[in-house]
Length: 293
Image 1: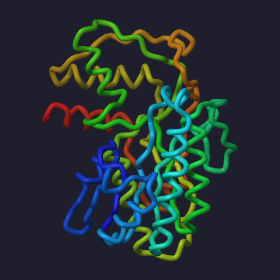
Image 2: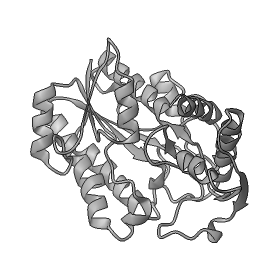
Image 3: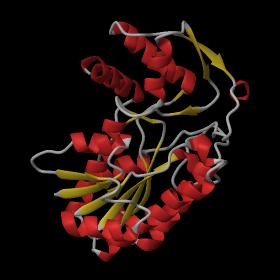
Image 4: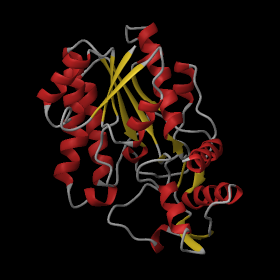
């Protein structure tokens, strides 16, 4: 099986590149070879690499900057996603598209299921929701995977930021009233490969078609996430700090965040026979990877 992945330098694309094996060839293509805002470059990349499935994790993810830069956010997250889905469809290929918990408003405390009403509270979430719709319109053979709080041993993410701050701070103030599931990029990759296996085994859409929630198990707050990162770092002899839990109102940002980012993964688990590990296990393996360099 050969997979073509957009966004070569993103956290999930880099995790996918590391997951290549003798049975699965993974080609990660980014700009200038493959620019999601340029349909011709997508078409050329598909013709060049002849994949069996196209995976689209490429996205504009600067949540705060998107508030003042909505045109670029929608160009990438809506129009770019639609371009990738359309070119895959024209080549007769299924697409796996990565989306986000930010498509929801964050009301309540119950985990969201796929059929719950969406209601993004910021430009980033709105652009990703529009991207989901564009993918669904352009390609009948689509799988949309909503993940949350993605982090990896590489790239820019919350866990790496906490470790950096701990280098010169004894106390780090972290929001404690936003809840979700930190999702480790290599675990997301394993879930994506499970979806690829289902598509290969059951090429007609059947049960694998549509929107699915896919995160690591369990839940925590951003403050709880930071505490776990520091605990595991301290065990490994690395930097750590005390966490001072604060309210969202004490840390104003240009973009509003959903207070409830909990996602219900049961549909994904049942459909693909795959369950991502608990988020604490992901943090442990994240720290193992950081320690090994």
